[in-house]
Image 1 (tube, rainbow over the protein chains, first blue to last red):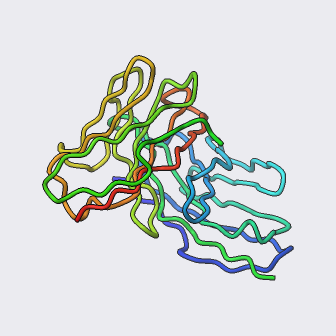
Image 2: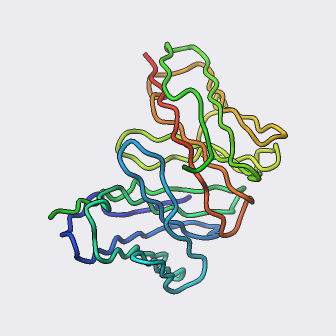
Length: 111
Length: 114
């Protein structure tokens, strides 16, 4: 089956760096996504990794290790508006196409 | 704004009833996925349609069914509603059924079953 684990909550200070980890188990891995979701809003795409390594996009970076079933999202120069839930999602091709989401990590950015 | 629209935004139904939720995909997208999101949880994958055919399904019972139309709009139908079906239902459209294609989410339909 599929399983995705990420911390429930994290707190960080404005201007700091925070790393949100995600571990996964899946049989037909075909890529890992990170989404941001503000309360009461739809998820919005942040990043995609399918090969091992680091993908950087502005203040956000995402890392993937397929052999370890591990990813992280790195947020730099935190801003108050970064307070949101961050969802790790894995695309699985075993037995059909599925995108499986973790429960999300609620990030609180304090002044 | 993503261009993915869902209707209605809110809905109240009685246990045992049937409901149809609608999604209009972003222009040019041929794949749509539906998710159920309970409060404080991540979206749970219901199913995915690619060019009008279901090509992936999560752990939801058969009373959850869907359609995708030639214009790539889609519907989620839920029969015999249960109280636990109360949730936010999200649709997401994308360009293809695999690969590094980001999905664009609609704002969701908040379904309450009483």
